[in-house]
Amino acid sequence: MSRPIQGVLRRRATVLGFILSLMMSASALAGDVVVIVNPANTASIDEEQIAKIFLGQTKTFSNGSEAIPIDQKEGATREEFGNKLLKKNPSQLKAQWARQIFTGGAKPPKELGSDDDILKFVASTPGAIAYMDSAKVNKTVKVLKH
Image (cartoon, rainbow, N blue to C red; front, side, top):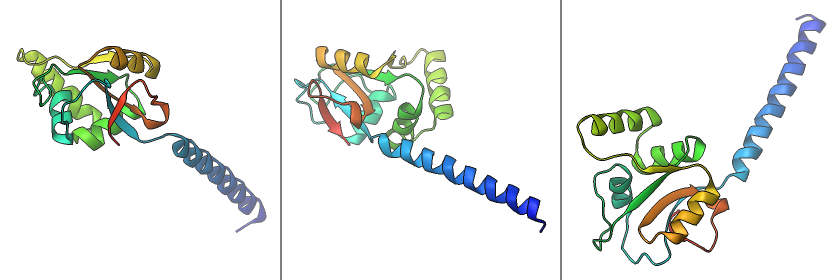
């Protein structure tokens, strides 16, 4: 290989390494997605019930109280929650909600625009259930699922 080509390849490898290290640093700063509820919620809630609530298959917690699911705006946290807890990717979720709306079934969860809005809503609404980055949770809510 000629020297100019080796130099170009070396620079590209350095840039690629830098980009990868930035991406890994950013993902390390982000916490895991956790499910949160109002601190007064005493219901026993497992992963299956969380999924049923967020997929519109049930409207209540195990103790019979109303469940009010709150979605994140579209983004990495919402995608991770869908993939890990609901076992559906964003396209599958959109298709499912389109079918439910078309057939007159359940409506998708209310969507709030920021973590602060979600924290305030869940802290002030007894039946609220939501999810967010664990690094942003505070003591005004109860964490159910890590």
